[in-house]
Length: 406
Ligand SMILES: *Cc1c(COP(=O)(O)O)cnc(C)c1O
Image (cartoon, rainbow, N blue to C red; front, side, top):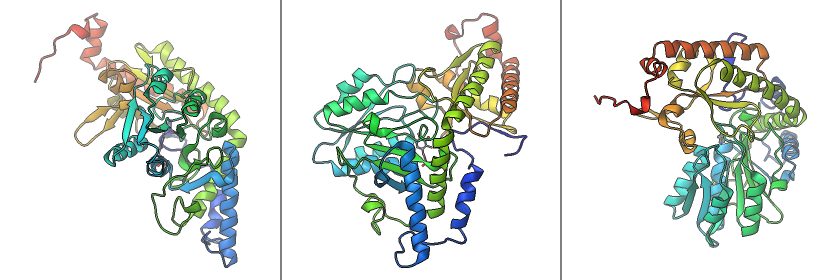
């Protein structure tokens, strides 16, 4: 990456590791085979490469290679898990439980399931973003077939108590699905130890290529099945038809191998840089709030509100050289505050004033120093221009001000 521009939006997507690209290149030129071609060496070589990648990915999460179903990404894996379980287990029940803070790939698939006749409970979370385990257990009915709870949140990095959730699922005989997109490859994720039966993740959030992901589907105790959402040649044991993206899968496998070898040192280094960044703001910028639980959290993420500063406006002061995300989402008509931060109980203004910093393997300490400077200067600049900040500094109680309607 260019030395001038700083990329701190690794939760949106990560750059490919050069070692990943090197592993993929032969599969565009010298090894162009279709992994489903069974009658010539090009096909065999492609199939061998897919088998190797499947094993690399299975090793990373400590499952059997047969339990990995390749998809086009985590969105598709989430859809396959949710809709596939709903269709397969309809006779057992039609109720699914998930969280209000899930990714749209889960929430929108659940909306579709409701249209198909399913019932979905969208549980609120606590102020720190964690699920309330008692509320989760209380939401289970005799119609509940699936609990879907993300491993780590993409906006806050908050990690849910997966083991405890797994135990609740086990006790009630309910399947446990997790969107682990933000966790796999960054921290140790072992679904079998946690009682997770289905797990979605993707290449491009772990330094692999875009457009390739996977769904782990448990094969034994219990043997889980999902109804295919894509019909065709019966690839991936009938669960996901379509010619396999061989170069992408090879890259995904290589990314998994690298992650397995390096995640511990990466996580330690990034946690130090993240903490340095966070502490710099906490210590030298006024009215700063860290969103989400800071103990059960991914090592490379922090989500911070700079009170009385619009995140989108703040980003404009430095977005020519620094990439971050704000707590506002662009909808057709307006900027909506992040539904994840709203679910944590933030008001609209604190949600709009938040920035997500997500660090990655290729960020350096020098970059973090520059980020501290840029963002601190941006906050100062915005506040200098802000009548609201001036009122706040003058001790006006902003809650009690009666704003004139226009
Ligand atoms: C990025 C992301 C997805 C979507 O993954 P794609 O591979 O881009 O489809 C799903 N869930 C979470 C939590 C994510 O962060």
